Image 1 (cartoon, rainbow, N blue to C red):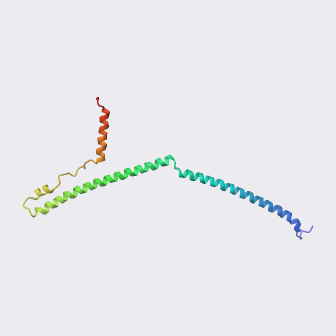
Image 2: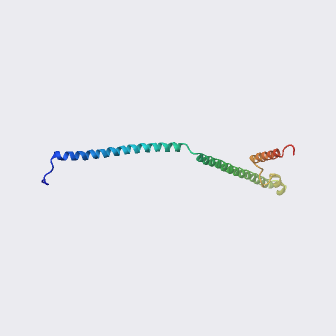
Length: 153
């Protein structure tokens, strides 16, 4: 047999054809695997999406606790601001009374101490009165305590 001469086309064809068939079969198998994996990926993604759309009870509880904490913090800060406002209004009226006394002390014959006591408001800078919600809770606590004591005690 002559090694330099190429094989006849009729001899090459069957070997190439079987090789091509094998490769085509491998590619078809690979495509089937990819299609199956794509379908399973889609199913898992849909299941994950459904799980994300419905939050679990712990997530809802955490959200509720966060909202309650934020509302409580806001109420606390508003209470601080209201108390500061009340204090500043009292301080302003105190100094306004003293300013009126200074202004009138130059025009009148009375002493400055008399005018200052006359124009100064009659309240102290101590603790401000209890806010209404505190008064309500104190009243409710007293009612509950008197209800526990009962009418026969």
